[in-house]
Amino acid sequence: MQRGTTLLLKIVIYLIAVMVFTLFIFWLPSLANDTAEMFPEFSYLQFPVLIGLYVIGIPFYFALYKALKLITLIDNNNAFSDLPVNALKKIKYCAITISILYALGATFLLTQNALHPGIAIIVLTIIFSSVVIAVFAMVLQKLLKSALDIKSENDLTV
Image (cartoon, rainbow, N blue to C red):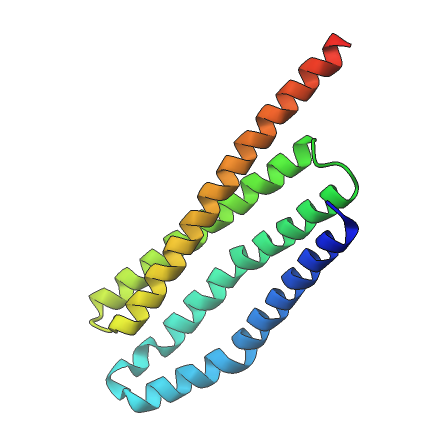
């Protein structure tokens, strides 16, 4: 890849990180307060939902960090080593973790009769997106692993 393309990818990852962090700090607490005031029968769910969303932020930011490491490895011409394979594996695990945590959260809201159809659509979209990312990372990981095997065989042949 050209340096400009990877620079653009890094900028996009940093922008995503800043935007999600801003949402976590400013928008989510005020949204939780407004929702608790509008629906007082569900106000007891305010803090469990907030805590759950903040917990989901941990694998999300870890996956962003691993994506930055992966782009840096590509920049340094280390794309065909074990480090990118490990980064893709960790991104896959983060995506699976995010989808499982969202499914658990949706199940919790469903048991509390608080799963609004709009929230259910958003949760299903996030779960589906996370599964797609996990499958894509798995495919890239296997492809890179087989390319590494071919490269090592060629290195041994010469």
